[in-house]
Image (tube, rainbow, N blue to C red):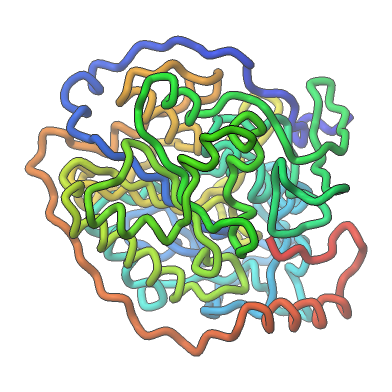
Length: 435
């Protein structure tokens, strides 16, 4: 049995929960006809927006020795990845002290404290521009104190089926078509943990949309490409093994064409690979890719009826000073950035309302009158505080991609990391995983 603060448990009821649409939703949120969840990788709020004026950010951090250290500069391409597993997240959170990020895997490499670094406006100028012109949320938490797979499952289902971590061995396919022998730790309601294939069969928002005849797509790299591991519906058996997989799950490079030609569905998810910003990959290249997607959307016919929720899936091991709330018998994960980009977003607004990935689903459910999937999305804050549906719609913000530092090939970076970390790895369970 895990300690109370670390317990993950079964948190979601298996049946749909009928909720009422809020009065605010009935007053004009129908103007929003397209909802996009754009999910990038592995950054904490303080790592990206700790210096943003008006937001609750930090420029110093506490270490396990009790010292307060400045958050130094994050290189555009990091020299290695840092621990962000379930165990790493609980270590870093340390019961709410937020003081042991230096004890995550590779958190202190010969005195180099990569977790205690951050970027500023000069490093991510276009993300800062979106924040100044639309909404930045500084109480957006990942839904689970852990890495990508459980949090990506939350973005489609408001639950993760008890999943604690990413699959092992850690390859580029995480789901029902994963390699034989690949498993994930799954925690049962009694606290016991079993190793199971990463293939689940709970209901998702995609199922709710399908039943209501509301259009949707999941844009992601195809099998065989880096980033396919984040094509999360691969882990939902009744979708992966049905025609929905072939009809609704499409290549991420199709998003720009659909946005420009007015072919976006009512609800879409968008993930990518080499531009995901997952360390050690280039932040600049990832930001440029995001700008290209949003420029296409703003130049297309759907801008005046669209909202984009641009977020990051987990903290990636980077420092954040705000303790995640405890919900029931488990922690939410550390804060991640969230930008809400829409003609109906409040201009230059910093939301201090607590959000997590279930809030995305709650927003869709309110907009389209859908039932909640479980108690997490039923109880989540719905994000309506970040909108002024009656305002004069905000104009487009067409930004220019920028010149980036020289980008090293990803394969070279991973090889170099393995060479470095083989020397420094402390134990097999803390060994580097590139996801």
